[in-house]
Length: 52
Image (cartoon, rainbow, N blue to C red):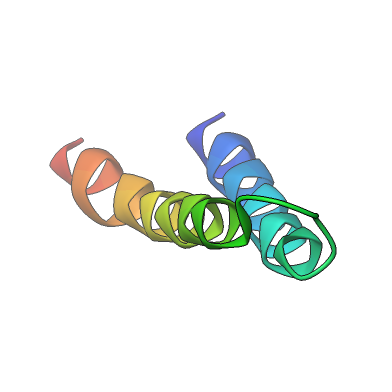
């Protein structure tokens, strides 16, 4: 289940990277949210799932 959530966060983060160049306002905020989601998608398996 955590793998699916991590994968979805990764895909949405990549989507936000692409959308950031097409939105009219808040480009930096959208791009930064994409960076946060990609980092979180790598952080979930690395830190939370490794404690099992």
